[in-house]
Amino acid sequence: MDLSLNRYIDHSNLKPYATFEDIEILCKEAVHYRFYAVCVNPFYVKYAKTMLSGTGIKVCSVVGFPLGANTPKTKLVEASTAVNDGADELDIVWNIGAFKSGDYDYVENELKTIISYTEGVIHKIIVETAYLTEEEKITALEIVINSGAEFIKTSTGFAPSGAKLEDIKLWKKTAGNRIKIKAAGGIRDYQTAAEMIKAGADRIGTSHGVEIVKGR
Image 1 (cartoon, rainbow, N blue to C red):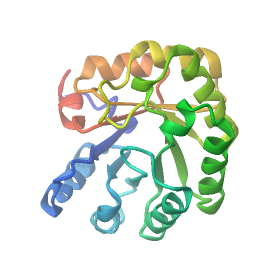
Image 2: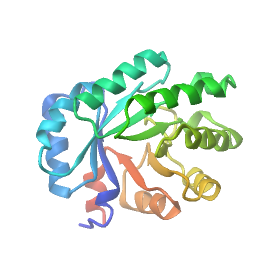
Image 3: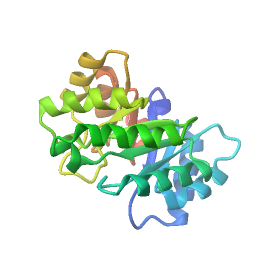
Image 4: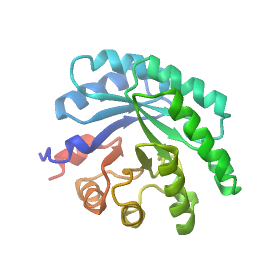
């Protein structure tokens, strides 16, 4: 078992059918393997926070998940509620359709509003790279940097594809240290996770954290 990657991992269960028992198992695994955080749907934030009390492990909630097509007001309420329930970090799906329509001001302003109303937590913006061209990936990166978010994140895990090594390399080369990168979607083994980190990922989102740390 190799725990060298454990503190990179957001141990995730975002399945629509996840139960309280599933989240309890997720949290116990996070404690046992000392993962950085658990990532859950908003309904389970309070429960995860209670389960992880005193452990130092962070609780991350998704917002606008998985489509990002909610109104800004809906996302703001969801984000604020998650923070009030104990979330330390928010993984926010931006408005993919608005971005693809070229309404970059709308997208950036939505993010800035949510971030300004939820100060004190870490914000990771999910841009869903599966739907973006290479040029759009660079534009997306700059918008997220301008929004003030701490991280840009590749994927929800619900799109046709997830994190790709070339996207992590592209973002790292373009952004340098201006923003952190979370790779997520399809990362199921040690080798893939290690390659993502070597390419520039600062965090790994996965439901296979245990398999990853046991994989070497």
